[in-house]
View 1 (cartoon, one colour):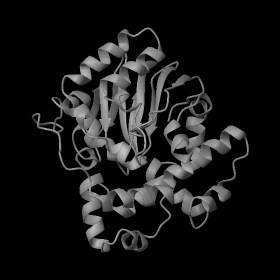
View 2 (cartoon, one colour; view 1 turned 135 degrees about the vertical axis):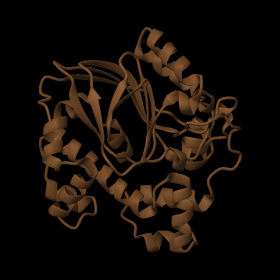
View 3 (cartoon, one colour; view 1 turned 120 degrees about the vertical axis):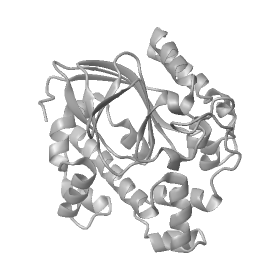
View 4 (cartoon, one colour; view 1 turned 180 degrees about the vertical axis):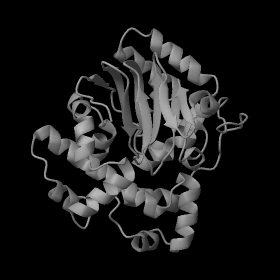
Length: 316
């Protein structure tokens, strides 16, 4: 990895999305002396990025791929991103149960891959990018983003549970819902099964620390049936989602400890459901491709500037 000490990052946090479809959103501006490699960590959320100038460049087998608008599903592996010396954009962490509403497909159809936004959103993607780039400031960009993605219509809604609000009614997708890489199709009328919604809620509430047998019992399904339905909705098994959430919980705790200057990895391991610090280290390497200390050495300027908001917002 190249030295990132000369990187200057600035993040502007968007107002909370009261529907819960967007867990967190930030406007980002990055300036560095030369292009650098960045680790895109797995998380319990879909990643939605709209660039304002240079594309996001993903390092993949056989070369690199540049995307102007990125829609990335749930994954279990780190994604290598080649950062330009200057880059601006808006990045949002999307609740996976809002995938139907915002992208017209269940999260499973987007899992383990990053898509060019136009393949998912149709003409909305380039229009959104153009409007954001022409806006005068981040307040205006956040307002445009909310309106274009159909978030503003939920501002006055109340009296519904968080998961119901997250799923919405699909109206924002009418006329633009697409299968990734394929032709347009009508929005999905059927939402996720209530057992799957409850399973996700329980996993989130316990930060992935509930046993899968207990999870299946709580939603009145066999473990096999739960795994089948869960994977069909999210593209991950319940066990994979639990591991992902424990990892994200650890990322949040490590980031907060580093910002406060009081990081204790053994305490993080205990708080996040790992057997011990070596167990945390192994899981971190599996998800991030490096140790917690190695990740901190790379990301500390980013963390100090307010990066990794997805983990902090989920932690709250």
